[in-house]
Length: 338
Image (tube, rainbow, N blue to C red; front, side):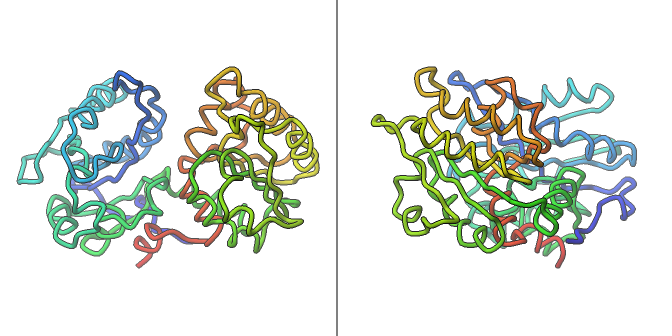
């Protein structure tokens, strides 16, 4: 898939709207628990700084549903950006009104989802955002399955392209989709029922789908169950996968050429219920297959078990990754191409 590359455009001293994914995990005290998503945006930001572009970063955090919720403000990210980019002037901007920005400066706008127009894909909200810039860059692959104003609306108003992180995601996932090393085994776990929407698209090209976690309890999972899709048996508590199912799943991945994993197989956060996910994760990491994971919980589980460095590619988006592999495209990518 050919996505416009932001390096192919003259961005010197231009006002660039950069859509990032700063939907960072928060602790129970509301502090940022992991800075990975901020780090993912740095290569694109540093390139733009070299071009002396005027950078206006737009992003979201959490699900405020159009309301201003103080503990979901993006303001704390300014300090982190300053630590990563000591050479740059980083400022915070609350309103969408006119503001002065100099060459090489960075302004981080307040949480887009504080405005209901973002998730509604409001024409007026997208237009008001577009008036702030000369060019739009989408570097938020993880959000590109959302039909939101900052994802699909802005490219209607401004010249647009993909940033480094988005371009890398599309390149690697396209290779998996077009020329996978077979057999391809997909593992779906966790609790989010919307993951099951991807099954029909995945069954058209993958060799096996293994389903664990709370997903096995949803009717849609049972509808698809056949020789190509296996459902795990859960323990009586429903909080972990039964070891007999772990053994069955491990047999499948031992034969795999490509492994795609989204969602833990149990409530791995608690010691009592981590066993199934841990044993399975260890088996995945011992496999010689090309291994991809996506989704915050999957990444957190492998990090907890000190296995994350054994994975070949960690996608920045769980839902976006699944939808791309199921449909071959995302609304945000289509918007960039059009």
